[in-house]
Amino acid sequence: MSIRFNTAQVPPSDRAEAIRDVIWGRVVRVDIQHHPQQERISAVGTISDVGSLNICSVRSNATIIRRTPSLVRDDLEPSLFLGLQVSGSSMVVQGDREAVLRPGDLAVYDTTEPYTLVNESGIHQHFFRVPRRELALPTAALSRVTAVRLGREHPVTDLASTYFARLAGTRPAMSPQQAGAVEQPSIALLRAVLAICLGDSRLAQEPLESTLQCRIMEYIRAHLAEHDLSAARIARAHHISVRYLYKILAGSGITLGDWLRVHRLEECRKELARSRNRSVTIAAIAQRWGFSNASHFSRVFKEQYGVSPREWRQLEERRAGAGLGR
Image (cartoon, rainbow, N blue to C red; front, side, top):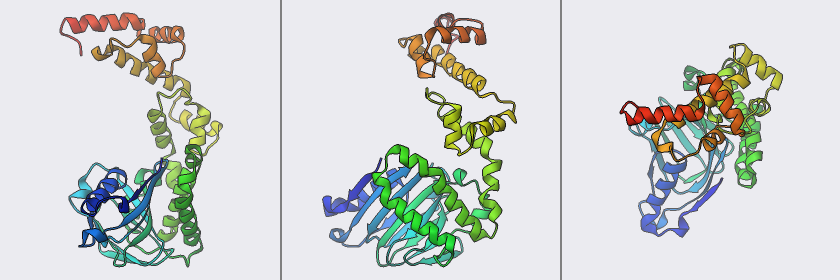
């Protein structure tokens, strides 16, 4: 989903707070220094997501943006920002480095460390936030590329600049399925740019391979309750074949069907034991965790735990009544 904001629709006295609310709520927590005259505060932009990639396209006359030492301690998932200068110029400052950006230039900065964005002529940029776990690059390597100008004189950076500008422009018109299809290629392109900047092309591929199983299991856990979670879907989300997916899981002794069944049953068992769920039918709980057939659910539950779902719920009710339950 994309949201648009325009301070022209907000009373001048409320504009600074309105900008803060939308940026803090959808992008990142930062201090924003605005024009001293409230009626001259102006910001127009669009915020959208491409899977785990957050995009903020903005034109504003704000002059200085700071991610302060206190703000870096917030609960935002550790992420990297890619800034793409559209017009004018700006400066990115992080650590002991600073990068001056001109139209088409890129720079990255880390949300876990303080940074400052200086925009003397106003902001006209696309900002892309991506979780560091998705980049799968070593922290020490990332620290070497923050606040470094990535200019269009390099062919891969030039390609990335053009691509990300087009992505920001076309994302609002994309369907969720289309956006999902370009999430991983977009992150892979950013990873390639950073690897080239670091002078080590191996970084573009090796972290992906070494963290693939971890990312697969994280994806499965996140989508465990969804009925359409399948080997084909998991493989497609990670741009591998189903056969290779099974090979990766087999390397850790995991059989996908068995793993899904056991963990879904465990979630059902927990829900059946909760007193606040007593009014929810057993079939509804089973359905919630991917078991569409009540008879099948009852059978596999008893195979796993030695009692039927109804017997388990009754046992927990008696335990709760005796003051022994949850």
